[in-house]
Amino acid sequence: MMEIVWLVPAGLVLVALFFYLGWFLNNSVGRKSIVASQERSKEILQSAEKEASLIRQTAEKDANAIKKEKILEAKDEWHKKKVEYDNEVNHKKQKLQNVERQLQQREETIDKRLDSAMQKEKENKNAERDLLGLQKQIDQRQGELDAREKQQNEQLQRISGLTAEEAKQILIENMVNEARGDVNRIVKDIYEKAKSEAKKEAQKIIIQAIQRTAAECSVESTVSVVQIQNDELKGRIIGKEGRNIRAFEAATGVDVIVDDTPEAVILSSYDMFRREIARISLERLIADGRIHPARIEEVVTKVTSELEEEIFKEGEHTIMQLGIHGMHNEMIKLIGRMKYRSSYGQNLLQHSIEVSYLTGIMAAELGLDSNLAKRAGLLHDIGKTMDRIIEGPHALIGFDLSKKYREHPIICNAIGSHHEDMEMETAIAPLVQAADAISGARPGARREPIEGYVKRLETLEALAKSFEGVAKTYAIQAGREVRVVVEHERIDDIFADKLAYDIARKIETEMEYPGQIKVTVIREVRKVHVAK
Image 1 (spheres, rainbow, N blue to C red):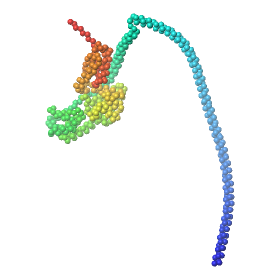
Image 2 (image 1 turned 45 degrees about the vertical axis):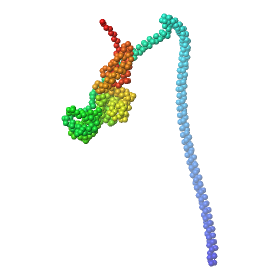
Image 3 (image 1 turned 135 degrees about the vertical axis):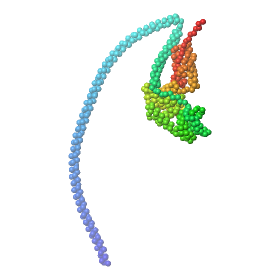
Image 4 (image 1 turned 90 degrees about the vertical axis):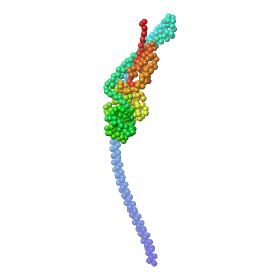
């Protein structure tokens, strides 16, 4: 127990001793480290000062070098600027000298002009004084003339017994009548000259166009005749209780006439395309020998398909014949379909080809685009292929079709305006109209019903007779000329020419006719005495 009590104080003493030794050692080492660190800091500071001194010296050297270099560059730049400035100043001085010389020259010129103007002003003043003197003389003489004129007028009034107003009125009437006669004579001369020149030129162009086209006249009928080997086939065509003929008419849309005509069957229809399908189908049925409703429908369907292909080939052949390219396939089909369409008995395709040639030739003579003209002439009646399906004038139907298939606007206008259903906008449009009239008016080209022919002649005579001073009218040469007999006491020779012109213009505006109509005014004086 005593040992333990002793050991505790001893342990405490040892701990205190160790603590003191630790503190002493730590303090001693710290001082040494502080001293060492201070010495190292001094060395680093001295080294840094040396490096800073070196850097400062190097920087001063570099700065001096750069300064010298910049001073040299600035001197060079200043020298260049000075040279440029001197050059610019010299250039401006030269310009100023030139301007001064020009101003000096202008000043001299102005001085000369001023001297000349002053001289002219002096001359004008002298001339003005002379004119004033002459004006006084003229006024004096004018007063004398007025006095003499007044005396003469008073003497004329006493001699003639008329006042000045009455004499003036008579003179004016005489001058008006004389002027009217002169005007009519001048108008007649101008009209005759223009008519002669225009007629010659138009005849030349039209004759050349007609001579250079050689289209044949084709007159189509509304019936087709199918020849058969013997009359026994008629019974087979009719069939039992007429079922074959009914099936054939239903499939083709054509009337079949089986009458007493020997070895022939007649097909009747206004539609030439359907009539052609019926003719070919009937010939094939007769050649095959099998005639019954099912076979009829089969043959008609096959023939229709073949004819559609033939129509396209016909259209292609036509445009190749005319040298036309780049046309829509649907338009080519419609062109081929024109082969099976007639107008007033004239085959529509042949008529369109003829119009195309005529329009192209006339356009070439006038210096216009002949290709566009030929294309417009070919397509001018394209609307007739659809006029039984679409309501409206065929010209406007053709205009819509050509627009739909992207034809040139000039062609569209020519198609739509060739019957004046719309306004003509280009020079090709009247050429198409003229070519259409030439082709349709050619003798034998078209058939005209007798009723329409007679009505046209009566209208022509009545229209000519509606003018004052007309005694009688006669339509001759199938309505291509009208003779007008006038009352000689009411119409003189000068007004007869004007009457012919007025009648012709009224016919143009109020009538529709093929070709042209010649107006002949006849004025005659008959004196009759009877010998007894």
